[in-house]
Amino acid sequence: MIKIVIADDNAFLIKAVQEKLSFFEDFSVKYTAFDGINLLEKIDNDHNIDLILMDIEMPKMNGIEATNAIKQKYPQIKIIMLTVFDNDENIFKSIKAGADGYLLKEVNPKDLQQGIIDTLNGGATMTPSIALKTLKLFRNPVDFESATNPEEIQLTTREIEVLEQLSKGLKYHLIAENLFLSVGTIRKHIENIYTKLQVHNKLEAIQKAKNNKLI
Image (tube, rainbow, N blue to C red; front, side, top):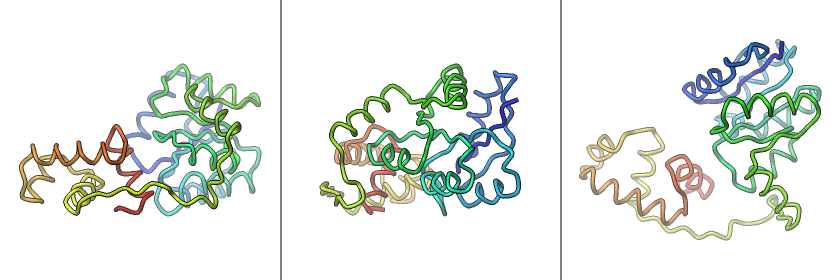
């Protein structure tokens, strides 16, 4: 039996991963954690586990920091980053922290199973798009530690207000009510935000806005 831990601050996404793992009788989810600190506390109490599926964006201590801490104390535990974000900096920092693999959350159950088995057998599983980005990073190294962000993103005050509401998980109609605007206007603001941030969905927009200290 392969003993697995899931670390994610989103209960819905934890359940989605558990459902993917439930297809395979030799996988057992031993426990879950909602942030890096919570994960470290649980591992200190019970480190008889084989592998962690680690989210990156978590409060208090993110997945990259948690990976670094766990690998120093329990190097035998395998860690696969399981995230919606495939930006170069996250990939680089995850590998540097000691991650054994990097998969996107959209991964199907069969590929997730194979990735876990490959990792436990000493391999390094990666979503193909991540593997390509990793190769490019090795060919053209970037110093993420000292590089300043070259992007100058200009959002209007109203766009920032919409983003802040969006980051709280509010639906369009609630944001419209809170800001005394129509739903159509909110949609237009969000469309403009996506264009300016060069992103394709809400999660990417919120993360990029936080990275650039816009919200």
